[in-house]
Length: 165
Image (tube, rainbow, N blue to C red; front, top):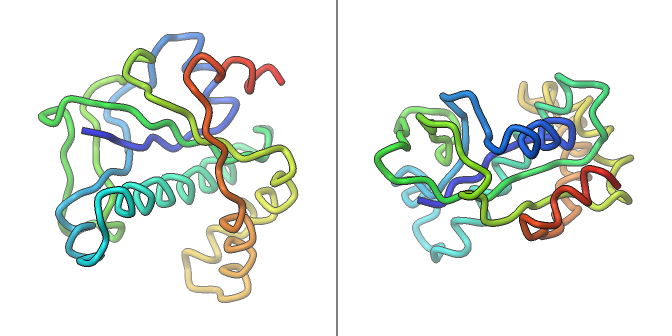
């Protein structure tokens, strides 16, 4: 099952060093039955994009919790055996899943990371995401500013260069 793991550049450096994302359980995002229900007209590719965007929003929350991390959202796309992934139909975010195992780097298919030019908007959004989650419309516009930046795609062998760069 394809899952999207939210991260930061600092956390990604640790993942690359350890050779895995963990320890479990890991909060991730995926195309769940609840997400399919919420987007009845979307095809698989569109639903995967929605799950990736949910992971990118969670990356903002991780950045808010780690002020020293570079202000770029990071999402890792990984393939995990379906039995290792669970979800709750009652979660506020229909794409949320829990991965019961550490995810080896070999299971990571790609990284989706903000370009350096997005850093100013991402920094503002990381500082506003909690208020946006609470319903503050102005904070929501700030978060939308970061979400207007498309995440760049990186092959797994390029991730170390991004972290070092």
